[in-house]
Amino acid sequence: MEHYERHCPQPERRYNCLIPPPPGYKVPIKWPRSRDEVWQVNIPHTHLAHEKSDQNWMVVNGDKIVFPGGGTHFHYGADKYIAHLANNILNNEGNIRTVFDVGCGVASFGGYLLSSDIIAMSLAPNDVHQNQIQFALERGIPAYLGVLGTKRLPYPSRSFEFAHCSRCRIDWLQRDGILLLELDRLLRPGGYFAYSSPEAYAQDEEDLRIWKEMSALVERMCWKIAAKRNQTVIWVKPLTNDCYMKREPGTRPPLCRSDDNPDAVWGVPMEACITPYSERE
Image (tube, rainbow, N blue to C red):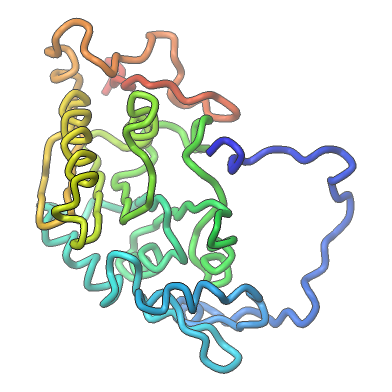
């Protein structure tokens, strides 16, 4: 995934001028209407509407693109899926305010969280589906173009209370679980990670293998299952270092070096290690 990461273009490809809007670009529809519809002329690549028509992502309707709120894992609406997740978390204090949505598609999950006063940062690459983030930004949903690759994401440690991956097609087991460990760096003590895969994969041998290996990895990371229903599991990160200190010597992934700065992010390579809490926490 390294070729999808952000990089500075060569000098001859850089623009030293103001870039005007594309021909025919219309003033965007204002929020909150923009969550549900945008001007088609502002986002010319609409093949995703046809490719994902069975999943209720988006529909071309005259001169607009309409977003019914569906997704790969929530065909019947992000609002119902969010309610399903909320019902599985014992969180009556209402203390979830920041969410990180990995592989967000057109960011309907993040868009529907806004009505609950929850800010979600949505992340997706410019891949075979072209730039899905363009849809999110046109809708007025916080999002950025990027990928979990080789460099740390541009956020200090413990930035989010909740991370989410709904069939995001990320190999969490690669390189000793380095991508999952990057999520661990971003989650606050007691933070959650919701991981969903389609019901159709419930008896798939490859999916069962992934589940078994991920379960073993997160157990070594001291994560616990907060809730599990069908093909959705929610793990919770420990509140203290106690579990880390009780692990057997040589357990992998190891704790990060004492001189590692978990808040250094600009161009810093990811490392396959667990960021422990400081003595002040």
